[in-house]
Image (cartoon, rainbow, N blue to C red; front, top):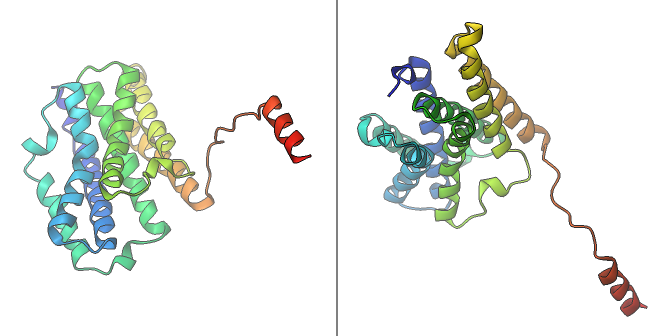
Length: 224
C-alpha cells in the first residue's frame, strides 16, 4: 500500500466520517426505541458499511478489522445517543453533520482507492460508495426510505468531493500541490454543496416521461 494514505488529515477525516455516520445509525435506532445492543449494531454497520464495501472492491484489508479504534468509536457514539435525548439529534443541524461525514468519507474513499492504484473513474466511484453505502445499509435494515431517495442532493455532493479528490491528486504532481490542500478543497466543496441542498432544498430535476399522445387521447375520449 502507498504510505501516502497514512496521513494525519485522512486519519482525521476517517474518524470524523465514522463517528458521524455511526451516530446517525444509533439515532435512527433510538427513534425506533430499540435496545442499546440494536443501537450499537446500527452504529457499527452505518459507520463502517461504505468503507467495508470499498476495501473489498479494491482488494485492501478491511479497515475496521485492523484498526483498533474504529469499533470503540462506533460503540462510543451509540453510548452518546443512548444517554442523550433524541430531540438533540434532529433537524437541519444533524443533517449538516451528516453532510460533514458524507464529504469526509467521499474524500477518504477516493484517496485510498488512488493510493491502491485504482484508475481515476473507479477511484471516484469508490469515494461515492464510501460516502453513501453506510447510510443505505442503515435505511434498508431500519425499513425506511433510503436517504438517496430524498429530493435534495446527496450522492451528487459525494460525487463532487470524490471527483475533485481524484482530479486534484492527478494534477498535484504536475502543479506541485500538496495532497492535503486537494483533500481540504474537495471536502469543503462537497460539504458546501450538501449544506446548500439541505438549507435551500436544492435538487436535480426528476425524471418525467412525456405523456403518450395516444393514451392522452384515449383518456380524453373516455372523459368526453
